[in-house]
Image 1 (cartoon, rainbow, N blue to C red):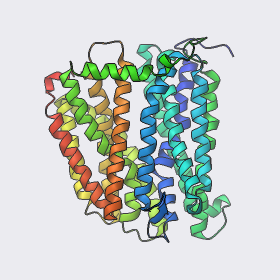
Image 2 (image 1 turned 30 degrees about the horizontal axis):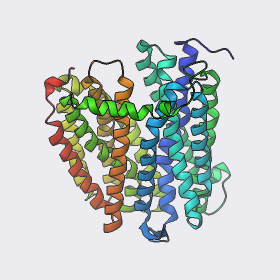
Image 3 (image 1 turned 180 degrees about the horizontal axis):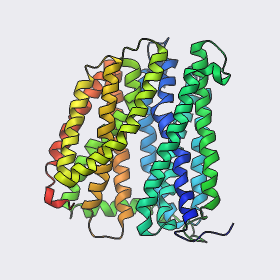
Image 4 (image 1 turned 60 degrees about the vertical axis):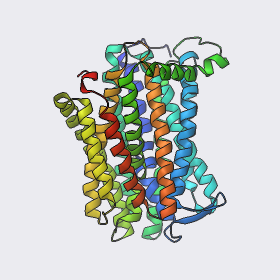
Length: 441
């Protein structure tokens, strides 16, 4: 079909709809159903498995695989960004990563401890596909929307992603709770595990199916013909990161803020990625059914409360300033991690999930907007945000490795969660070096 003009409402809606398509990955695979399924596989193995020539705890193993995946993503992102900025067929690249991610989610249906390497490969590729497709998806925004449209359509994408992912998760929860109503046979435990496997397939089908609407309207690329893919183009992303690193020496407030953000993000992202594994292992659920339902409900609570937390944090920053508000939120996170050492009952976990939702939504939204306010006068904001994203991913690598190592050594994630409190305290000291006057409100 003929390409729609930049700013066309139909084109903008089609772009935003990709969030509806792909956000089911982050909620079902990364946060809710897969961690519960993965933990259930080890119910008769005392949480340990011999893999890669080592005797590893299951939660430590998945932490290391996640860290490795983010390390690859942090390396690939600048490469893909360089390609996305110059070639004219970015839609093909976006499709490739989308299909790799979606098909890998479907491949998790066959995840089994007897074929653990294949299962871990699907998990790894799913994460790679999701983040790889986002590089090209995000790069389309300035191509399809005028500057005054970008904030609104970006927010619409996040909203669609939230709604779509919650809808599918509720359907999956119903399948897991009442599998026989959906024609899933077997004992209660077997049927629930089958329902989880089917949910992985549903994520892949949902992702591929709904992304077609986006692909139908998106143009081939930012340029009709594109440029020849040379080594200079491929490594342009790294050159941009190097340029930003050099500019940080001249912008002390931004450099100081990035230090605090890096340490804080390292801890926040780690907590959110391992929360379900922690809940499955350390909370005294009365039954497997209560554990499954309770953990998914906690994830839904976090999703709902995070929206409210983001709004309240935004209002607090308007009154007290960005940096003081961030310092306060980091303080709450530090207390949260310290208290996590003592929680054992489902009620405790529900309360902690509510608190986590408030401070998660707040810290993520405010961290990004604070960074934006500290940027120098430049038209090259894409390079600065690419640096921000890479820093965030490297932080996840470090955080997941620290968590995995402590979990493996101590045999309990409790000590690992408490150690993360040190990161939040460190972040507070680093953020105190950023003066309130440096951040305009």
